[in-house]
Length: 287
Image 1 (cartoon, rainbow, N blue to C red):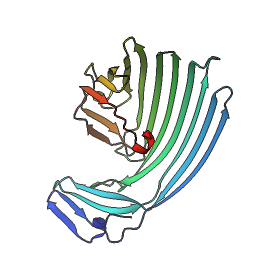
Image 2 (cartoon, rainbow, N blue to C red):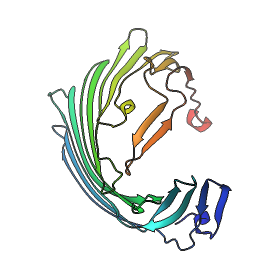
Image 3 (tube, rainbow, N blue to C red):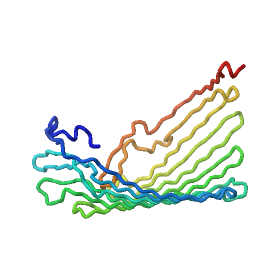
Image 4 (cartoon, rainbow, N blue to C red):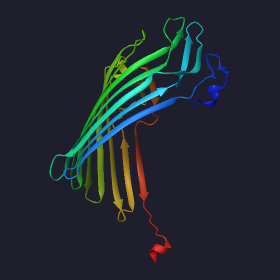
């Protein structure tokens, strides 16, 4: 359903440079979804394969028709219905052990999606259409491997995410970018009921027009904990982004090819925990 305020035939001019109009003629958006799922299980060998296909069509989607006047600097926004939004997604995953003891495990996940995103974009005084259609193709591949033996475990993960976006709009620059990350994890139980776990990840971005988005960031997290009083008391210390390479400002590309900035207020921190487990059984159970 449209927001109640969007259905009012009024203009909000509290900000004279940003006028928001209502639209009493808005229709309800309708979402059609079709999904196909299949899975194969070999429990004796510990192998699993999953396939998922999904198609989504949105009719009368509600978007904001934004018109910017370069001469006056005034922006006007009006909610309107628009058709043409649909997406198709496919996902295939496979998991299997690589040894008879099932200590060494491997998994792969492949994702493919195509999104036709339609929205509004127009500028007063220009011949550009107020209909913005962007085709987004995304291919992602993830590989994981892990090894566990007794109180020791180690794992690795590689992920590649390729995005391609194009549009018939004259002011649209075709986007072809790749996001990569490589991760190593480890966990070991030391003498004295001390647990140590850590993970190290390299985030890499390539292919963006904005040079600040083509970056390499190392992220190292770690945790050390000690159990006391037969496991009822746990003392732990967490360290997040120990190398201090994460920025509190991140830039992304959405389905319309626009850059968006998100903020994270605490990119780097240490935190201590004191956890006490108290179990009191009901009186009837004690009897």
